[in-house]
Length: 490
Image 1 (cartoon, rainbow, N blue to C red):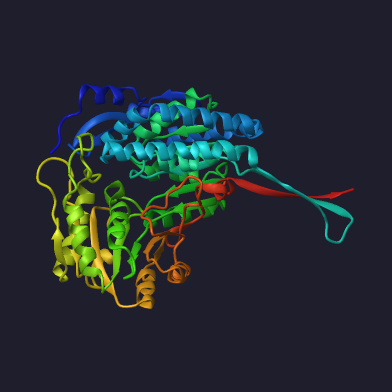
Image 2: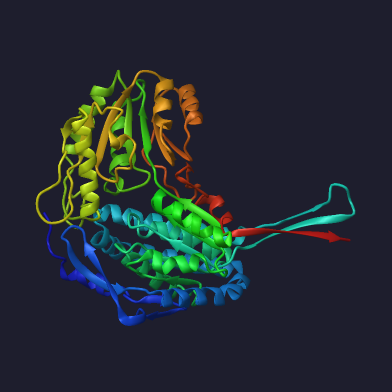
């Protein structure tokens, strides 16, 4: 199923700095400790990176706080030009960055390259937004003075990013941060630090001044990041990850009353009405379910299908899912790579076995792949009952559970029957129904007759326990700006 890294792959890994990036310098961690990075396709360690300690975190925040004023005063066009140069360098190195991402995260190289280009798009978008930060000027409504407003950077930021999109989840925060004139300390997930270290290297080459972005790689996120969240110099916290961890971070952020952005868990419903083109639906379902091996907060987590077309949809989806080639992401024609680690694969299998015990039928897959690495067969489950855990819990794997509904109201109620509200997918050819359903869904985003919503120029985020704040689009830079009002007497 999986092989050892080739010499070319090893060279790509060796070309990435392995130290902490603090104040524009690459350095070892205090005490010299390291963190192993594992290839999930083989279980082998492919690199050792610095394991930051609390002293390193303080040094990183010192650097960010020290650079804040000068960076805020830097011309917006220069901030934008740095982002533009970094965008161009990412595009130029997209193939190597994609290979690096696959080696540490597992997804097929073609999909990794799509993420690399998507990540670059955030830098390109905010290169333009940097010069469009505006204020207002108007007479007071009762006369006598003028109302002036200006937008200013919120200040030093702390970022914590996940392993599933190791580059895009970073640029989605870093792009607006740099454009707005803020500095930051970022900690990537311990499973996938190499992509973020490569990005820091590119930003350094693009001319980003020292201290504007500082990167900490560490085994223990809590020990390293909690002191920064509670430090009065920090003014903004942005986190992408589980709702459970997000809640703890929100509690910590209250001590300094930080500006907070949270992109948390999801339980995305995929609604299929009987007037939809089922072949088109299946193609969209494959994208919504299998993007990133199903390890995405936007992944279709549960399929609610009209009982009139459920059998046809299930049969066609199972056929397509069963044909997907599973293997190491660097191998030709592989469509499904390994899950991130053994714990994640065990969780996915536990949810599948629970659904089977509740009466679900396995149409394809339903078990782990034998051998090295953390592979799980693409799985379709039909006749999933209301009590199955995978209709309520985020699967984060290549498993598609199918339940049925009889009418539109039942479909909307089923979709909203969750504490999460990130994204939903709706397939229907009836325009009036489309608007009724879209307006009735309790989610921050909707994919209408398409299986993907991610777009650097659009606001990404959820409602309920999927978080708050928006990343991307014009709204994204607002998260890094404060409004100052001046009452000006003439």
